[in-house]
Amino acid sequence: MNKIKLQEITLFLDKSDEKTSRFVPFNVPEGVEKLCITYSYTPKILENEEKSIELIKENLIRDAGDTWTEYTDYSEFMPLKNLVTLSLTDGGIFRGAAHRQADRQYHEISSTYASPGFLKGEIRSGQWVLCLDVHALVTDHCVCMIKVEGEVSE
Image 1: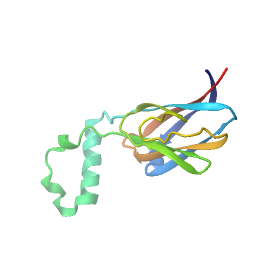
Image 2: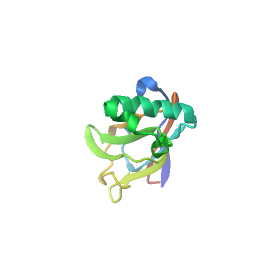
Image 3: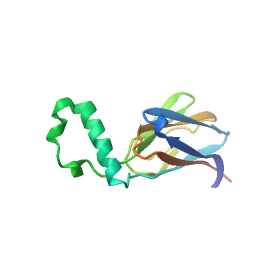
Image 4: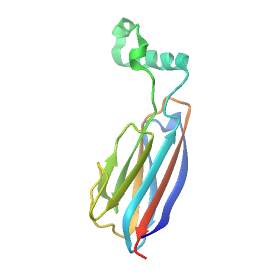
Protein backbone atom coordinates (compact mmCIF):
# COMPACT_ATOMS: atom_id res chain seq x y z
CA MET A 1 0.00 0.00 0.00
CA ASN A 2 1.13 3.54 -0.76
CA LYS A 3 0.10 6.55 1.30
CA ILE A 4 -0.95 9.81 -0.28
CA LYS A 5 -1.45 13.06 1.60
CA LEU A 6 -5.04 14.31 1.36
CA GLN A 7 -4.87 17.17 3.86
CA GLU A 8 -2.37 18.63 6.28
CA ILE A 9 -3.27 21.75 8.20
CA THR A 10 -2.46 23.61 11.38
CA LEU A 11 -5.26 25.63 12.97
CA PHE A 12 -4.67 28.36 15.52
CA LEU A 13 -7.53 28.69 17.99
CA ASP A 14 -8.20 31.42 20.52
CA LYS A 15 -10.93 32.20 23.06
CA SER A 16 -13.32 33.33 20.29
CA ASP A 17 -13.32 29.74 18.97
CA GLU A 18 -14.68 28.23 22.21
CA LYS A 19 -18.04 26.46 21.73
CA THR A 20 -17.74 26.65 17.95
CA SER A 21 -16.90 24.21 15.17
CA ARG A 22 -14.13 24.51 12.59
CA PHE A 23 -14.52 22.59 9.33
CA VAL A 24 -11.61 21.07 7.43
CA PRO A 25 -12.62 19.77 3.98
CA PHE A 26 -10.49 17.39 1.96
CA ASN A 27 -10.91 15.52 -1.32
CA VAL A 28 -10.58 11.77 -1.60
CA PRO A 29 -9.59 10.55 -5.08
CA GLU A 30 -10.72 7.26 -6.64
CA GLY A 31 -8.87 4.20 -5.43
CA VAL A 32 -8.34 5.17 -1.77
CA GLU A 33 -8.93 2.08 0.36
CA LYS A 34 -8.19 3.45 3.82
CA LEU A 35 -8.13 6.83 5.53
CA CYS A 36 -5.56 7.51 8.24
CA ILE A 37 -6.18 10.57 10.43
CA THR A 38 -3.50 11.92 12.76
CA TYR A 39 -4.74 14.65 15.08
CA SER A 40 -3.25 16.57 17.98
CA TYR A 41 -3.60 19.83 19.84
CA THR A 42 -1.55 21.75 22.35
CA PRO A 43 -1.59 22.85 25.09
CA LYS A 44 -3.90 20.39 26.78
CA ILE A 45 -3.69 21.79 30.32
CA LEU A 46 -3.84 25.29 31.73
CA GLU A 47 -0.67 25.34 33.83
CA ASN A 48 -1.35 28.67 35.60
CA GLU A 49 -3.01 27.77 38.93
CA GLU A 50 -4.10 31.35 39.67
CA LYS A 51 -5.81 31.68 36.30
CA SER A 52 -7.37 28.22 36.77
CA ILE A 53 -8.94 29.26 40.07
CA GLU A 54 -10.20 32.49 38.49
CA LEU A 55 -11.88 30.51 35.68
CA ILE A 56 -13.35 28.01 38.14
CA LYS A 57 -14.85 30.84 40.22
CA GLU A 58 -16.29 32.54 37.12
CA ASN A 59 -17.98 29.33 36.03
CA LEU A 60 -19.23 28.49 39.52
CA ILE A 61 -20.82 31.93 39.80
CA ARG A 62 -22.43 31.46 36.38
CA ASP A 63 -23.62 27.89 36.96
CA ALA A 64 -24.21 27.58 40.70
CA GLY A 65 -25.45 31.06 41.53
CA ASP A 66 -25.30 31.99 45.22
CA THR A 67 -24.27 28.49 46.29
CA TRP A 68 -20.86 28.78 44.59
CA THR A 69 -19.25 29.98 47.85
CA GLU A 70 -19.77 26.49 49.26
CA TYR A 71 -16.80 25.39 47.17
CA THR A 72 -13.50 25.97 48.91
CA ASP A 73 -11.38 23.16 47.48
CA TYR A 74 -10.79 24.07 43.84
CA SER A 75 -8.35 21.19 43.42
CA GLU A 76 -11.24 18.84 42.63
CA PHE A 77 -11.73 20.78 39.37
CA MET A 78 -8.07 20.89 38.36
CA PRO A 79 -6.23 20.65 36.15
CA LEU A 80 -8.38 22.61 33.70
CA LYS A 81 -8.12 21.16 30.21
CA ASN A 82 -8.81 22.23 26.67
CA LEU A 83 -11.17 19.90 24.84
CA VAL A 84 -11.20 19.85 21.05
CA THR A 85 -12.83 16.80 19.48
CA LEU A 86 -13.35 15.68 15.91
CA SER A 87 -16.05 14.13 13.78
CA LEU A 88 -16.06 13.07 10.14
CA THR A 89 -18.56 13.25 7.28
CA ASP A 90 -18.38 11.70 3.85
CA GLY A 91 -20.34 13.83 1.39
CA GLY A 92 -22.63 14.90 4.23
CA ILE A 93 -23.01 11.36 5.63
CA PHE A 94 -21.86 10.95 9.23
CA ARG A 95 -18.90 8.55 9.43
CA GLY A 96 -18.09 8.86 13.12
CA ALA A 97 -16.62 10.90 15.93
CA ALA A 98 -13.80 10.84 18.43
CA HIS A 99 -15.12 12.84 21.37
CA ARG A 100 -12.24 11.87 23.61
CA GLN A 101 -10.04 13.68 26.11
CA ALA A 102 -6.78 12.62 24.43
CA ASP A 103 -4.86 15.49 22.86
CA ARG A 104 -3.10 13.10 20.44
CA GLN A 105 -5.15 10.68 18.37
CA TYR A 106 -4.82 8.36 15.39
CA HIS A 107 -7.81 6.91 13.54
CA GLU A 108 -8.26 4.56 10.59
CA ILE A 109 -11.31 3.96 8.43
CA SER A 110 -11.65 1.34 5.70
CA SER A 111 -14.26 -1.03 4.32
CA THR A 112 -13.24 -3.72 6.82
CA TYR A 113 -12.17 -1.75 9.89
CA ALA A 114 -12.76 1.54 11.67
CA SER A 115 -11.27 2.95 14.84
CA PRO A 116 -13.75 3.06 17.75
CA GLY A 117 -16.35 5.75 17.21
CA PHE A 118 -16.14 5.58 13.41
CA LEU A 119 -18.09 3.54 10.88
CA LYS A 120 -16.34 1.13 8.57
CA GLY A 121 -17.44 1.21 4.98
CA GLU A 122 -16.47 2.07 1.45
CA ILE A 123 -14.10 4.99 1.12
CA ARG A 124 -15.99 6.96 -1.50
CA SER A 125 -14.27 9.51 -3.70
CA GLY A 126 -15.29 13.12 -3.31
CA GLN A 127 -15.30 15.73 -0.60
CA TRP A 128 -15.09 14.67 3.04
CA VAL A 129 -15.09 17.03 6.00
CA LEU A 130 -13.43 16.83 9.40
CA CYS A 131 -15.24 18.90 12.00
CA LEU A 132 -13.32 20.15 15.03
CA ASP A 133 -15.64 20.90 17.93
CA VAL A 134 -14.05 23.33 20.36
CA HIS A 135 -15.89 22.36 23.56
CA ALA A 136 -13.60 24.10 26.04
CA LEU A 137 -10.66 26.42 25.55
CA VAL A 138 -9.18 27.32 28.92
CA THR A 139 -5.86 28.58 27.57
CA ASP A 140 -5.57 31.80 25.58
CA HIS A 141 -4.48 29.91 22.46
CA CYS A 142 -4.46 26.36 21.16
CA VAL A 143 -2.76 24.87 18.11
CA CYS A 144 -4.46 21.95 16.31
CA MET A 145 -2.57 19.82 13.81
CA ILE A 146 -4.38 17.50 11.41
CA LYS A 147 -2.99 15.15 8.80
CA VAL A 148 -5.21 12.97 6.62
CA GLU A 149 -3.63 10.32 4.44
CA GLY A 150 -5.17 7.82 2.08
CA GLU A 151 -3.84 4.35 1.38
CA VAL A 152 -3.99 3.10 -2.20
CA SER A 153 -2.91 -0.18 -3.76
CA GLU A 154 0.37 -0.15 -5.64
